[in-house]
Length: 224
Figure 1: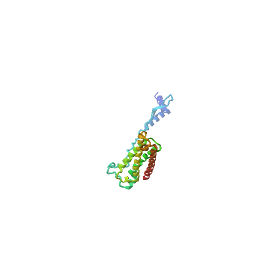
Figure 2: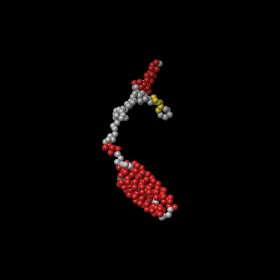
Figure 3: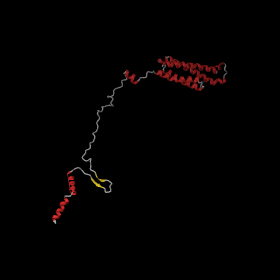
Figure 4: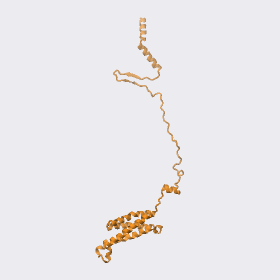
């Protein structure tokens, strides 16, 4: 009986299935590579199991902090480190700063040009007495300011300055004449003193003033 059992065990161990099972266990013991535990789904839905950790054994490296390739300037905002502006250097003043070469007097008379042009248009368009007198008043006040500003200075002897003062006086006289004509014309005849308020006389005075304004504009432009 023992012989029969012994023969049966020898035959069992000699089968390919047992040999394969023994070989697999041997390889599993000798191989340190992690193996995936895979289960086969009988329904044919795929594999299910735990995959090996492939990142194990690898060491991640942290990037080093970048450092600037330049050194911080010491006392950058200090007044000792900032060079003063070379305002005494003519090249810096004329090229960098672009010093204004226009004198204050020329700037003043240039600002008067629009006022003279408005007066001229007012006469040409035969605007009302009120509109003309308002523009004349503004012009005369500006000239009065220039007279006070340049009194006793070389600019007061310029030909352009004298033309402005003469024009201001003429403009004021015509403005007064028109205002008086509006006030007294209904009560005075066109003879004697009333002749000064005649419309033809006033229009003649406006033409004289127009010519003087045009001449003054030309003088001011030449002064530039």
